[in-house]
Picture 1 (tube, rainbow, N blue to C red):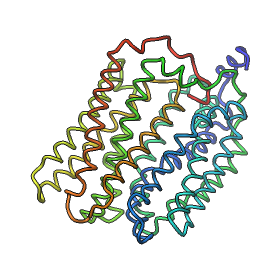
Picture 2: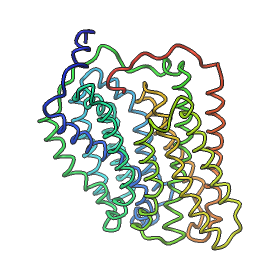
Picture 3: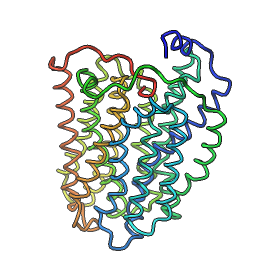
Picture 4: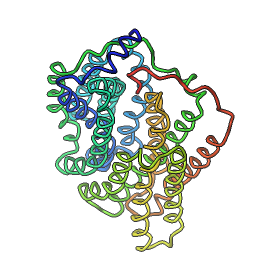
Length: 411
């Protein structure tokens, strides 16, 4: 696209169907973001249906989705540069729904994991297209409002994921996957009708080597990786503690997990107010230290009923503190979003894998002691992340030229 065409695209008024476009893209984004919390809450239900399946095998249902999404997000962003936003989104959504259907009727853990892998491929194709289709559909003067609404959609998925996932799992965990089919089919039909054909840009998604020369991007990537390891370890431990040790029903567990999710949502929608130049460092460091401190307090509490109650309060506080980490880090690196998403998903996959390994072979319904090895993972990861962030931000080693503006698929 020539500079003149780019200028015209930026300055034109919003498209006539822009609110329909926002509705379709917001719904698709909701389905993608909904996956983590909803499926995580159902882990004990999945393990209960497939008798004899180990925790490590069930954890693959989460980890496979994260790992494949992490591996394919950046390559799919480059394919989007080549083939266009609208075709890639519609194709990705079709693939995502195919994986949902396969997982929803899976007769065994391997087939369920295969369905999740197909879902992950679709999600990786979809992710780089969403904002690239949304932002040019609105006048430039309305984009701040649109971004706020977009944050609200993401926040809604994070907040309602545990509750809706719990309600669906109470009936049958398969509905978490199958419920997307009619909604996704409707979005494909509406997408053909309302989604615009955005001209391909002459620029391309920044390469990782270029991005890593930028100090703010390097700090954000390192912080997001460590935070994702910590947060997903926290999530898996929390789900198992609530349902296996403290015997919460799946719906009640989902309601409890809504507390930290709500904190994350509120902070995500108000990132601009919380983060100035220094806030982009201080808030993530504070969030990581609160998380580490909460787990240390839980680990050193005197065994007994009081420890169980204290642990519940502290891990809720640790989860809530996660809201201070992710949104400011993403805001600090406006380019390279596809790469940051890859780093975030890779950290999540590591967190699931290591946590499942640490808990394997333990009687998780016996006592809190069985969870201690896994509880150290978010403790150490969060503390190390805070130190790493401070070290990277204060170092002059990564000083270099700012990365030029990315293509619209990577924003």
